[in-house]
Length: 361
Ligand SMILES: C[S@@+](CC[C@H](N)C(=O)[O-])C[C@H]1O[C@@H](n2cnc3c(N)ncnc32)[C@H](O)[C@@H]1O
Image (cartoon, rainbow, N blue to C red; front, side, top):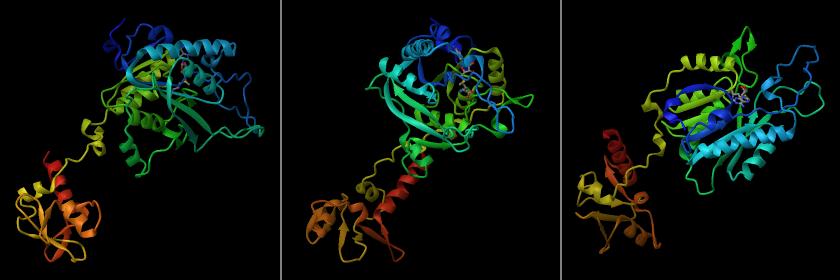
């Protein structure tokens, strides 16, 4: 078995099953697999104006039968299962032609499904013959090798990315077009080049900086390009030498983002600050009065951070609960101090203090 370090950040030309067989067990954090679709396209498609449709008619997508496709699928998926670290995860993308077969084989091999994502293409190719619905989506399966895996998922960052709404399993993203689409002599260099935005989301969501990502059907190298940009290591496998060259050229153009821009800062928990800390720091003075927002109630701050009110002594929470006649209450949201003749919520003082702590490092 080869040490994976020898292959990090390189493109390996050859059959993925044969190459994966030489790689060590449990050595990769994330796998992205965009296998042949087995589209079974026999004849060239034409638009109504007789221009050619640039679909997937390539040799790499030809299989003799479903059985042959299934055998091939089972072989590469078995190797993926062996190569994944215990807490690693795998993404497989496909269309209606193959994703159901691939999904069933994954479950038979013991993969544990976490989600299926529907990539809804905002600019799909029409159904030129007008005989079926326009095929406007692909499906991605996200899975681990066993149900108890502690897989990586950057929930809070994704929510922030989605303007503070939980990220859903339907992703609206355009096809890879325009400048991003690699062309040779004005023709698409690869018929199935995926958009970088799709891989960006997959990689940001389910891996960490410095992780190793394997793409065993690299094509034009979209996974490697995004992995490099996002400070991950990659191992690329691709059968066709011309595509390998395309990937190598593509990777030369990519500069990794600076480390400090890759940190998942929204996920770092705020340091816990106690009311007594604000008192000992002099942010709230010993002896000063605290008020509720209507100024109906007031309490005095003692040296140990407790409050005294109507001859009762207790924490900011206990005294506020007593005044409200409730079993418990959040004192941070109840008490104010007077600053420049204005009431200031003690929770805002706490936030300012935390900000300063974070800023000072
Ligand atoms: C659907 S494309 C992948 C496209 C890629 N995700 C991209 O964004 O460009 C599948 C690729 O797998 C390659 N391939 C097919 N069978 C293979 C095999 N047995 N080993 C390695 N690569 C293979 C094909 O040459 C093709 O480039």
